[in-house]
Image (cartoon, rainbow, N blue to C red):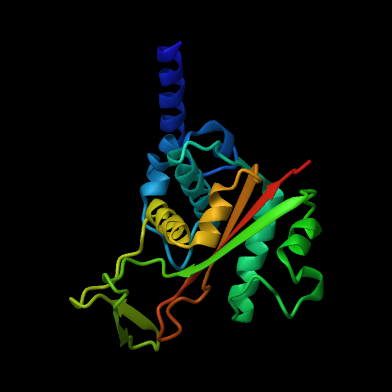
Length: 226
């Protein structure tokens, strides 16, 4: 039986490497298999990111953190993902960073957003994060130069262009930051939650502004408490 399971895992990993991301990866791949795919090891295309893959990477990185604490992994939920994507997009488009969306009364709170997307959980939670999709210096330092066409390029302190993070590295860095915060860590490791959906949004015109483009990430958790 052990050999059979190993063979199945290997076949799934090979299949995943040969195809683009699709939703079946959530149920077909283990955490290790997911992070071992070529797609997840690829650098983010900051101008045209694969958002579905990025969402999945944050999902699997979250379960990776839970498994390290010997907790059951959370199950993927498309409704929670839609609510998370919606909130990340809203924060980016409306230039705010908060769990409360003051400009939309119908989607003001995480509970409202999840319910409006079709969620029926009786316990929910939300984590949000803002971070650059690049490898920066130890203290986040970087330099900026203006191109001839008016766009901006972002450089390391050595004068070389900043390299985008891989999909996997971005997700793991995001979860690592959440895990450093007691409240966010409590959501990730809570036994009250059984399901998870993650949504990331990146600036649509990343080189238009002088400041480093940021990615906004939301985790929505759901559970059923008796």
